[in-house]
Image (cartoon, rainbow, N blue to C red; front, side, top):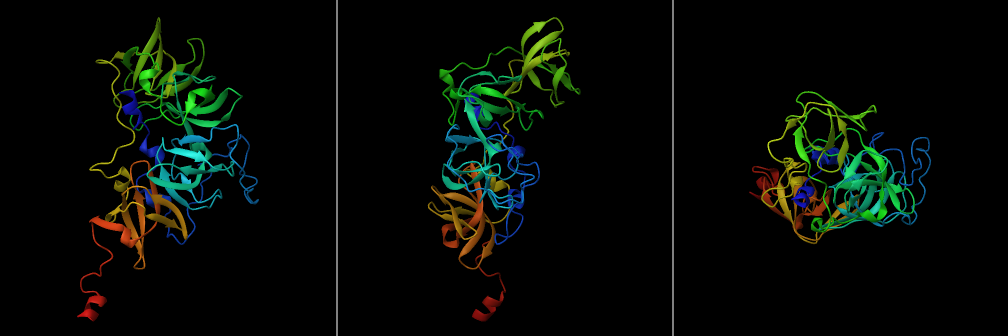
Length: 384
């Protein structure tokens, strides 16, 4: 049950807003793409050094080999906006979106808070992603040291870099179900050997303890404390219906709770909790799946819908950026002559790219065939 839920436990709004391509580029392919907004990708490099800001006008260093003290293979974590860029420069065009859990292999050192990666899967591609999108799966349950965050098997955490020979610095934002995340994130350490680029078989590891399910009081935020003697560390938000929590221990009016569906927040609350009707409810999925075999990405744009042939190459700025390893789907966004079509393309719910494909690689599924002249056009009149 938990592994099935894990496949859809990332909020769509953290990954891409509606109208994906409009935010992906918002301009013609012949023009430079998205400029990073201040603060979107953070100002700290993967090695903890500042790489932007007062050096914004300086030329970027040439990328070196991947850092030896990092895992070479990781996965994509949650984040806002596009994830894949043509280069490390602030004004490098954005070309795609990556959903959490997509496996990537680092190909370079960190440059300007980005790193070049190979993206695995049915829509194989290569590009630069923000270092804040580097993540890994927890392989066992455990506390993120130095925080009140707690991980269960296969929870995704953002990897910030080595803390020492045995531990990695990680950032955790507890997931509260559906599209809700705790506003505050927590930075601490987790054993390096317990982070990996693939989910663990949950039948072979111990899950978080069950506890008793209660709901928070309706219409009010609830402070969470490190202990009954300490000041609050964070507040749980108002949700409708009220957020369920697991009570692990009771100390008079105080209750030790675990909030969220993984990653979790733990601590103490002094609030009037109401018993759930049964066990902890299954949360609403955070990333909707596609329907009728179509990737969810195809619902994020309008335009004629096509099937795309296996082996099709996607081009951007006269450069091949990807090749389909299976039949895919595409929304047509425009035409460039008779031979090339501007598309938003995906094979599944993992990766979506913007680029040009050859017209003969497309098969129209629904919508108007823009390759044919309109009725009464000048071409038809000349032929008549």
